[in-house]
Length: 319
Image 1: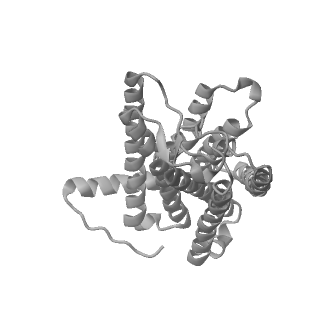
Image 2: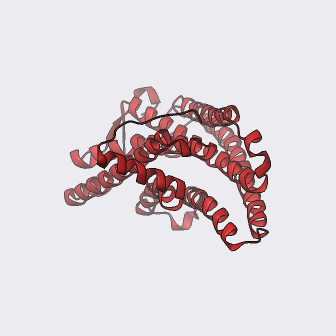
Image 3: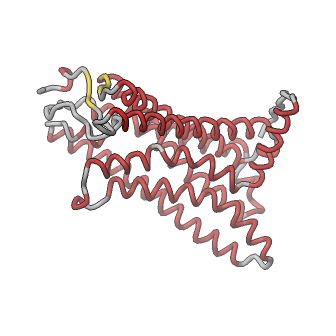
C-alpha cells in the first residue's frame, strides 16, 4: 500500500490464536470495564449528590472519573468485540477516532492529576489562601485548560499522523489504535520528523508537569513532617496518598511502556504493558480514591443507605 488513502482498515494485535483464550480475554475485559464503570459511576453520583464533596478536590475528582471512563470506553469495547468475534480488524476512520479519543482522555487525565497535585499543595502548604487560590472560577478555568490542552494535543497528533502516507502494510502491533504504532507504518520522512517535533513539545510539557508534581510533593512532605501531632500528620498524609498512588501508577506504567530498553522487546510484553497503562489505571483510580478518601467513603455510604431505604432524591448545590 503506497498511500494511507488506499487503506480501508487496520489489523490489531490479537491476544491469542486460541478461541478459548480469546474468550477468556473477553470476560476479563468485561469484568474490568464493568468494575471501572461501577466505581467511577459511584464517584460521579457521590460528588454530585453530597454537598460535602462540593469542594475543589471533589470537582477535580469528578473530572478525573470522566477521563477514566473515556479511556475505558475508547479501547476496551473494540477489543472485547474482536475477541468475541475472533477478528482483528478495525476500520480506518474507527482507528483514527480511537487514536484521537485515547490521546485526548489520557492527556487530559495527566493534566488533571497535575492540577490535583496543586490542590493538595495549596491545602497543606498554604491553607490560609486555599479559598482564594482555588475558588469556583479558578477551578473551572484550570479544569477547562486541562481538557482543552488534551484536545489540542490529540487533534494535532492525530491530524498529522493520519495525513501521512502509509506504505508498511496495515498491521498494528497493539490491541488498539495508538499513534506510535501507526507511525511505524509510514514512509514519509518529513512527516515523521514533524511528528517527532510534536512529540518533543508534548514531552517537554509532560516533563514540566512531572517536575511540578515532584517539587510540590517535596514541599508537601516537608510541611507535613513539621506538623506537631501524629494525628495531624496522618490526616494530611491520608489526603495525599490516593493522588500520589494514582500518579505513580499512571507515570510508571506509561514510562516503562515507552522507555523500556529495546533488548527486552517482545510482542507479548508490549501487549501486557499496553494493558497495564491504558486499561488498569482507569479501572484502579476510582477504587484507590474510594478506599483512601474518608469523605468520599462517607458520601458513598450515605448514598448507598439512601438507595437501600428507597430515598431517591438528590440535591445538587453549587460548589
